[in-house]
Length: 123
Image (cartoon, rainbow, N blue to C red; front, top):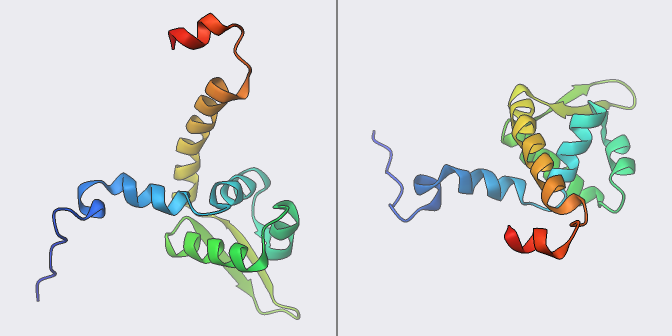
């Protein structure tokens, strides 16, 4: 049985980066990745405390999506109460290498006030 090819106007078929960017652009996703990258594996409650303002529902959705994409893992231990820890997979680590480069660029572009108007206009 042959799989149908996506239509040529399907963004996933034309530009895989569009698929990745749609994953990353979800609410709180980049901040959640940053916390997991800088703080290491975390339990759900720890993540919720560290990401001030995120709802339980959104944190659950983001973690499930990152797990489905192979970017994060969920480690379940059947203790009482159950212990669930989330962390980055190797794929998540690979992604963080790229996001670190983007963070460096963002800091250069937006992190500091321009020294003078002429520098901004030269671009």
